[in-house]
Image (cartoon, rainbow, N blue to C red; front, side):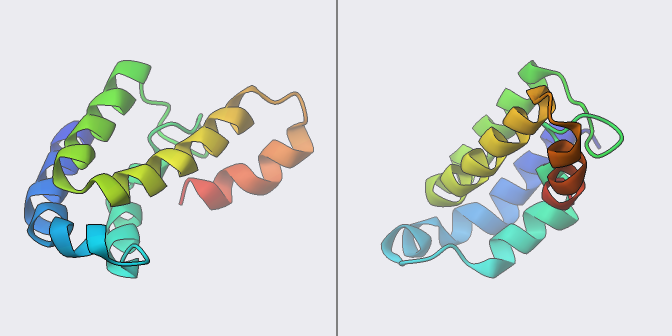
Length: 105
C-alpha cells in the first residue's frame, strides 16, 4: 500500500465518520493524531534518514486525501508539515538533528 493509499484508508475509516463532531469540538482527538503517527504520515515531508522524503506531489496527495476525511485534523497535520519543511531547509544542522526525528515519528 502506498503512503497515499494509506492516507485515503485512514480518511475513509477514521476521519470521515467523526468529521462533523471534530469540527464542532475544541480539540482534535488524540486518537486521530496517534493514527496519523502510526501510519507513518508525519514522516511524509521529512528528509531521510528521519522521514520518507516523499516527492512534493505525493505529500500534496496525502494532504488531499486527509482533507477529504476531516478538515480540522488535516489543518493541524498541515501545520506540523510546515515546521518539518523548514527543518528540511535550515542550515542549522544541530536544530535539524534535534527536532527532525521527533517530528517525523
